[in-house]
Amino acid sequence: MIISNIETTQEHKLDDTCSLENHEDHEISRVNTFSSLGINPCGKNDYYNVPKKAINDIVGFDIHILNFVLNVNTVHGSDRCILLIKLLNSGEICKVFTSSKYIREVLEMVDKKDLPIATKFDKIIINNRATSYVFT
Image (cartoon, rainbow, N blue to C red):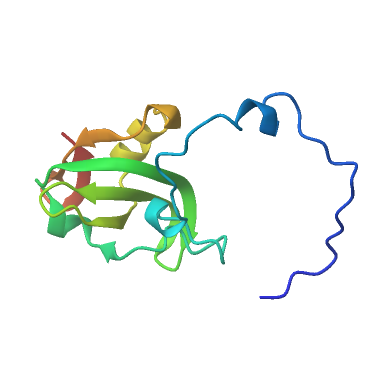
């Protein structure tokens, strides 16, 4: 990957909250990588570089919501939610796409600093014909 038009100067200074002085005596006990955090450093639109699961395949499983993105346009439609989750039975980290308005409405109330959140997905039938998903 080639990055162009980037200039570095000595004018960029660390503020007090980011200065090295505040951290030089800190012992680093754990260092993350982008992949361990489910972050793809190469592409903005490839949300969470982890395997994708069908939400229907994990209904009833205990999960932790690690992160999420709202209002994503995909080839399957607009206004989708993408959730980065951990399946507690296997420890697997994966992503789930959904258009469920019920899931979106709940996620809109979540402050990301409160993540991870323990929950499960449940399937509901609306008007005896449409399927949607909710958190339990």
